[in-house]
Image (tube, rainbow, N blue to C red; front, side, top):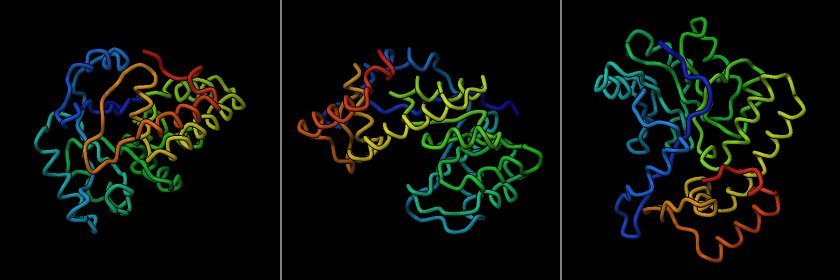
Length: 244
């Protein structure tokens, strides 16, 4: 099965103030993402009911993947969102051969050891997509981060691609500096309720207003928006970010 090389953006959903999906900005958004089309499908574990055993997770993914058997299926491992703190090595062992179109895992967790163990499973059979923008460089160093899916790529993609480019040309110092900078950007959005809230408002600041968040997410106030811009200015963000 073909593996993904490079970074894929996880886009925000544009909304109107009443909570309806706003399709109008999508063509402009798509120009930054280069193309539109379904290459694969993915799913994360539900927050309720909480999945607490590997067998439950495999069965859940098996039914979803069977809905589009001709497309590669990726499990989105983001346990901070759903509490599914399960062994991904055990998941691959249990799902291997049982989910025919299982392509791999989008791994968004702090354990670089487990990430690498998954990458090494069955001689690298599965595609281990890097999902934590804070740690691209160490995963490159371990030899695993050939592809990735990220949220901060929406507005900080130039910097994140720069990390990969610097690593590929052997410029470790530049790669380290860019990784440090990407963490500065993430530190800022963490002051404003993370990527889904703070990051989405950054899109407005760089020229693509995708509207408010839907509940249960709390939207940034006008005063917080000014503070967000001030903190981004302080790290020179608008000289390095994506542009529309």
